[in-house]
Image (cartoon, rainbow, N blue to C red; front, side, top):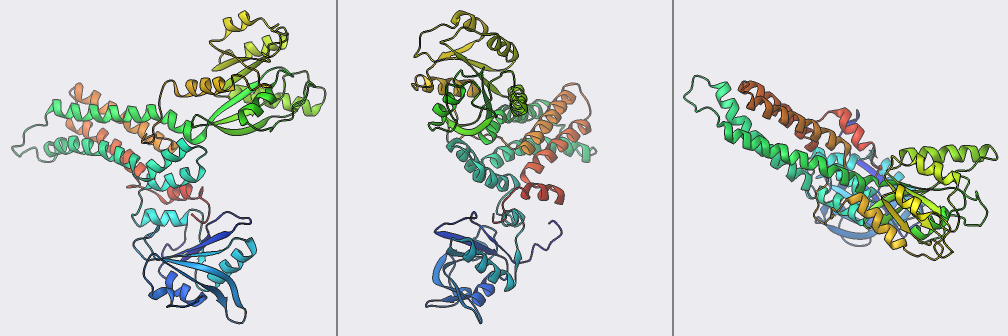
Length: 461
């Protein structure tokens, strides 16, 4: 795709840049083994093109006139039992950028081209090793921020989403075949489709699609995280709370109001949920342009937050700034947190309790009740749902759009069936729904779609 020949042999560095003990260069394509013969000198034993699949060999990458470039371990994986279903060679080099670059240059000059982003995984899809939803799961696994997100990605890679979609497709195809038999052969003595059975099949598909839509919220949370903002007036302990949640000193903490002059964002794992937590600048009257920008950014973060932690200083009376913030976040899902409970209480706790459904007393400085705050965040996100290791959660926005469209079409088909419309009308909606589901699996795809999906991958995957 993307205007290049997918029969080319390709190569790329498959490990992140920087210094490490090992770096890997992956080669895939019909010329991978002859190319390896050209550049690899085994310490002992035969050439790579003659060895068994799934074997590793010690030797050197060499170049005529230059000699040894690097000491390596070379792995051979023959088609079709490889990641791409093509012949694959992986060269384990020393992990410095200079040695990796030198070996890659030697590979490229020997008869292959540099892989495009995601091209190895795209070939796995095009060669039938993965369907499109499984190919997309590879990127979710790479980007997983928590164990739960990793498990969800692995389940999708194993085919959990595909199995769910294929189950829905099976019922729809059964309903469609009965309808089309009467449409295509009206003169034949074929019994009309069983209205009740067709309705049951469509109801089952509709319910399954609705369930996937409901699950998608949790899938998106696991993949993208929930945007949580810590806000409050100056010097209520926002930075101390961020440090307590991170279990490290990320923010500077001083008794001087306005120490945090800009937003600070981190991702933390709370009960398996990736939480993108933002420590905002105190909402104060800005003294200079920098503070003005910081206050504007803080307000924007509050407006777009999924969850707000509104922090109060329990050792001080409720201020006009506190009241202004209480008003500002009233439409948001908010946890009102009274901080500094290690000091005498002066805040009007009754007022806070009357304004907010979710409240908690903590001492960020003493690390008191931070675990209860974590439990409360998880509870609000999951609303009683337990995410197990075998959960099948739809997280990909492309999948969600297709599932929603398919569900709408099946609901329309049910309505047509109940209102006595022709079999052709019902069948057309079912066909359109099947098209949506086929797009998820990659049974139907365009070059533009593949380019968009795989351009998000790193070059070596």
